[in-house]
Image (cartoon, rainbow, N blue to C red; front, side):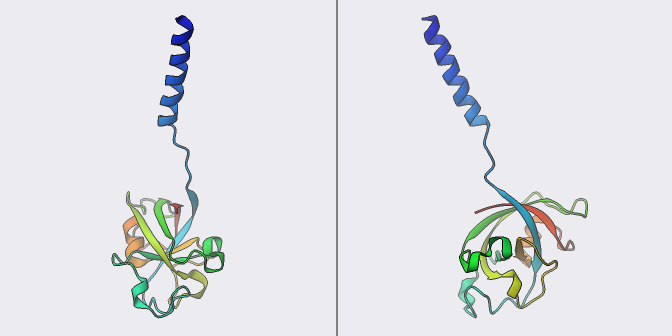
Length: 139
């Protein structure tokens, strides 16, 4: 009986720890922002229907572009930090990739970032006056 209790305790402890410990599957990178004009895009050309109804979209940087395979992918993005203290908000945003950062029609606020968020998306995670932020993102 005592052996059964010890085994039950071990199993219960293991299950409880698994519930409490959630390994992170997110990647870290950087993000900048860009404003209009947004067309044409490297993913879908001049089709205005490519933009999500909520206007939350992004351009992919070289790190995730994958020869255009990321077109249409959605990423959950959260601001981690910035060179400007207090620039991050507590919010997260889900964006859809519609363009390639290296071929944007308009100039991003910083070059070489993992994602370039459309202005509306950027403002949900950071102050719009900041040019670049450090992010956590998941697909």
